[in-house]
Length: 324
Image (cartoon, rainbow, N blue to C red):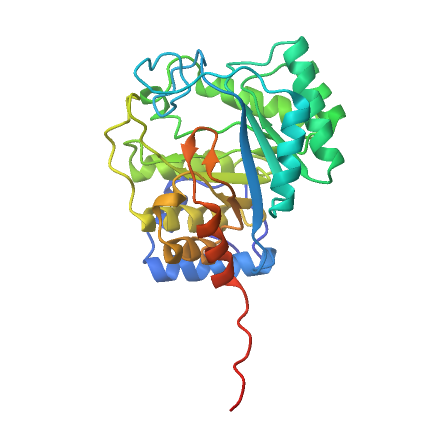
């Protein structure tokens, strides 16, 4: 369990994390909120924007992903890599709407040197020139490519574990868990922050969820950013028929991630558009301190700007009532 000063631990066992996850809910949220307040400003919630800069045609077979070329029944328009100037202009609009971090995703298995990678480097440099954090998710990459991203000013590289090592083969067969860990190590070696989390609601057990968090929480250092996603079932994918998770399952995952990784930014990510405003606020109380802002996350729906405006208005301090 977390110590009195919440010094980061890197020796968590799956059983310890599962025990946290399964605490009585009010106890769990209370503990997580206390840890969150000791490590973060409880009133600060970072807004991040996510853009698909190259859509569809991915050779991976991730069961949850509508961008996989293996899922031919998905209704998705494939798009080539976007022009860097257009991407930077979209980042500027996101910044004007309140986003501090701009994330760019390309449906690639791995980075390939050449004109397209050069274009991504230009996007990163352009976003950083705006004063925003820049994050990309491009699949696997080699050391020299990580170095070039670092030189372009990249803030963070997203490469999710998706699930536990034990359940992983039920979700992806075209890339191993070891491949994912190797990519993360390559990124870390060049001083780029890690953005690494996973997805719940794919048919995994509670122990699988704890095991995924255990892999993250035993990294040294912990990932700077931990996105927790709820599966968004998409017609035509193998997981299209999955029942959406209950919002309190997300609350438990957020709280457990906060307890296991006190200093990380825990991101309330895909699937929150199905949660009530109150459920999202409970996630923030449990330790989430970032949301993805905008109508879509890559290719799946996200909470609308109007709904998010109402969410942030509800979080704001209320003006004192006038005395009659």
